[in-house]
Image (cartoon, rainbow, N blue to C red; front, top):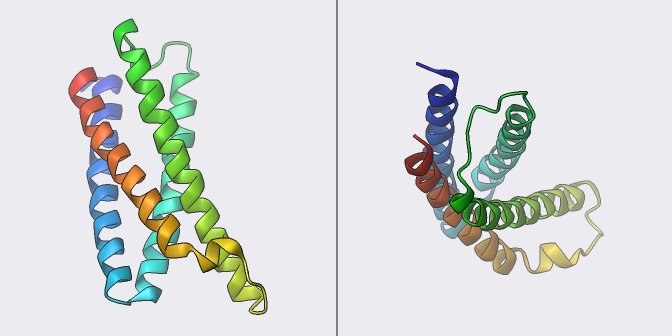
Length: 140
């Protein structure tokens, strides 16, 4: 298996696992299991940043593993921007919750509106993972 296919296959596995974790986490939040939801979202947010770092590292190699056709650039930009918005939003929500644990007296805006922002960001994040499957199909 070439490095290109290995990278794409690992990316696909991560996409599918992360998609399932997001769905489970969403259900846990809906059922009031905040502790498990919190653990999954912290894990998922950290893992997503690691995935982004690996993706950026591989794209800086002298010969990137993934060759990009010109007609896919707009899609990749759109997919990447939506994904970063979702990830930055999730990161902000995680930090707001962690901050409140350390400083119980704080009343952060993101914590007061956690459900609303959580629904927006998880929707964007799920779209991003669907886009990851599309990317796999485009680049395999």
